[in-house]
Length: 357
Image (cartoon, rainbow, N blue to C red; front, top):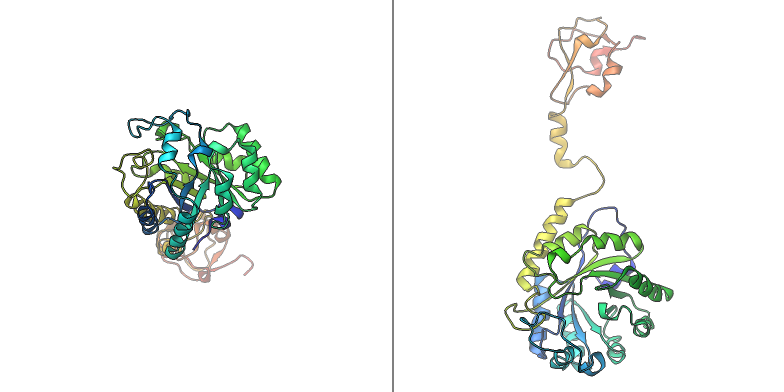
């Protein structure tokens, strides 16, 4: 099983073949406080082809004030404040996440959960090899530095961030020598395709060439086109909200992918990567018959008697490519026919002798 820490610690260069990214199914709080639902999400994520499943760990009181307004589509999630929304789903804490970690281990899928406060980070440190810092905390210097104190690789989402804010956060993390993956992200639920700006993946990779770059997607799943494009642009980590039922009410169900979406994407991704193939030009084994039969050879344009000095007028070029290649015509001109060569016959080196005998 691939581990996220290895992906982050050994980023790829821009050149070379496209490889399968590390795929994170972001379950978030789509378990809605039910362990059985959370277990089901883990099982579905594994069946769909995810490398990891990620949850969220918080207490509403430490995350949002009671007066924090909603910033999502309230036709899909009617809750009017952030505090009320977080309060609905804060039921899981250390005992529950330990059980989810065990379930993940038994299913051979990596467990992750984003901490939103120091207390959560403390117990999650015993359960994870990698920390995720959400876009909302990219300017939260004391919290970022606390996460760095665990000396573990970090996934940093960059939604709603300026270039300067990303650079500042990177400097805090890199000061401690912490391996880092920057996740291009648009902090809008759902994100319109026109706002996806996937070229920012290339921009991040160009500015931070020694850093793994990924993509956290909030667009509607559809055919999962945005994740495919992100992969082609070099994303090494992909993250998308994940649910067992997209028809359920709530903020993170309707724009999430489900097992069928994930499975279909993984199969199409494997096919696309196979189609992309190698980056360096070479002759493929499957091309050898065409190389032999579709290329041309030097052919006698007329009957050439023995002893004739070969000139351009004696030569043409035709298929197959089993004789002397036309690229060697300059070496053939000026030679003498060592035997009679019939019109339309492929010329061989054994039929020629040079001017010096």
